[in-house]
Length: 140
Image 1 (tube, helix red, strand yellow):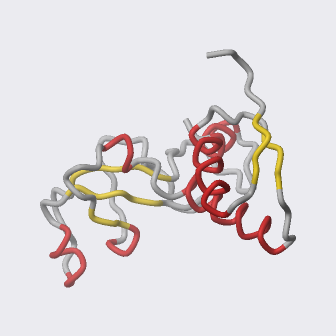
Image 2 (cartoon, helix red, strand yellow; image 1 turned 180 degrees about the vertical axis):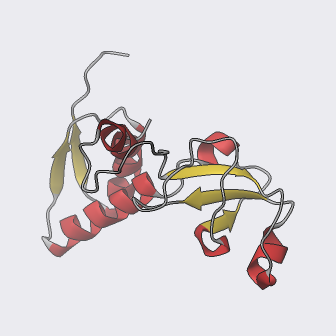
């Protein structure tokens, strides 16, 4: 569970939704129908990754209506689990690395380094030649 979804569900995110509400800012699924237009027609029958925002969450649902522009077709070798986390963490890592490069740092310290985001940051920093000091909560 992405922390942004968790805090949104608790009502502690930047946008507090009126109840009842659906949660889930990113997800994946299979397009069963479309509402028309070239983009919708092109996605029908495809596996997709989707991203929602605070105003239109709901990826934690069996069915949901999304704007076709928020859907990205997934390759066959991408699992639904991987597709469901294709936006928030990768874009966060991109922002982190951009800031590190702007500040011309040679190393950074991160906590929760064994998390999905932490592992992505380790790889991205390695690619950029930035050393990482990684703190984890457990030995495993």
